[in-house]
Figure (cartoon, helix red, strand yellow):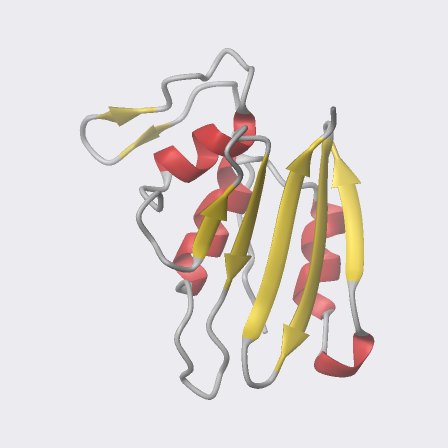
Length: 126
């Protein structure tokens, strides 16, 4: 599995032609990432009511339904995932169970299933 995301430099990000991250000065980075990646209506991306955490259910290699890897990559890119956490996500295999990592006030937990794909939760520290 490879979902390499490049890091974003700066606090504001522009996606496409006209969409600019509204809350780029801070506040709700998880909600901002979901909005910027245009995933609010995806049945595989579940943003908490307070906007401080998101659960993404990715697709499995077997072709099951789920959020496309481009969605996972976008959210991780906007949230500027650390290289250490990204490497850990990339290296995860099914028998590994659940993993976690932290960076810049965010915490991710994830696991990989051959039937259901990547299950990723990202939470903002209180």
